[in-house]
Length: 105
Image 1 (tube, helix red, strand yellow):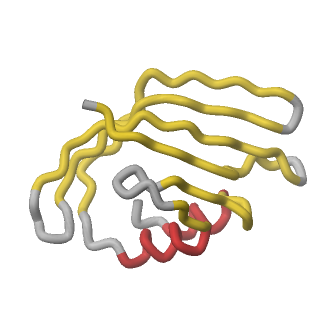
Image 2: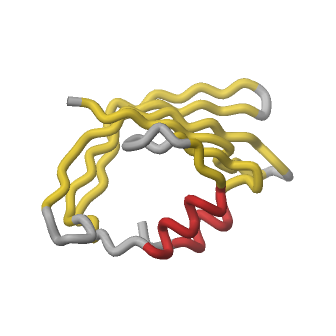
């Protein structure tokens, strides 16, 4: 998650993210700043239950991601998020346009 460059290259300029903890709508710049400033340490991020579909220049990906590591206070984190990601094809490249995640028990 510390690779802010990946996000800079692969998120659309108008990217939006619905924060899983707060429900707040965040922009591309908000997300990239959060990645750059994060002091959390992720030990693993594993995806499962992936389903995708594509129609013309729009793609959808849903699934579950299991996140494990330590937060900024070095406390353990271990949770699952069910997510939806929207991709758009621009200039021959697939870019992430929007994402939403909800914690799963």
